[in-house]
Image (tube, rainbow, N blue to C red; front, side, top):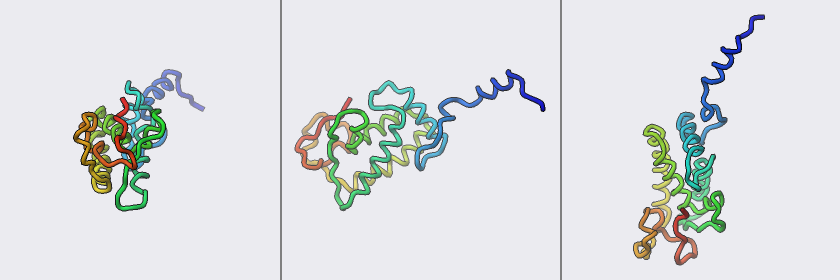
Length: 159
């Protein structure tokens, strides 16, 4: 039985980059975009970005929109750690924006279309806060200027 030489085996191992061979893909995104996102998550220096955060942020946003009722109110996270802070849909949207900014143009466009649908839902199903323009830290993004659930002054963006 013929066998491959050691050099041919090593060459075959080096063809597939590590970030591409990781299993799975992010729901409703292509494999190439999922691989680019995984690479950004792994190489990022930001505290909020860690491996798997994009899939988790997308999942938390979708679960927020599955809540009953026509009008939804974001609520601040109980714990400020980087995993629990995704309970606040506005923070999850911040993380998605950070990932989006770090991507190459083609994966950025694909993830951007998914985030645009989230933004449309967020704009349609949440209410604007009339007192938000008075807070300097809430001028960052429009999704931070929404009425929170039972909170007079929600916490600023964690950075």
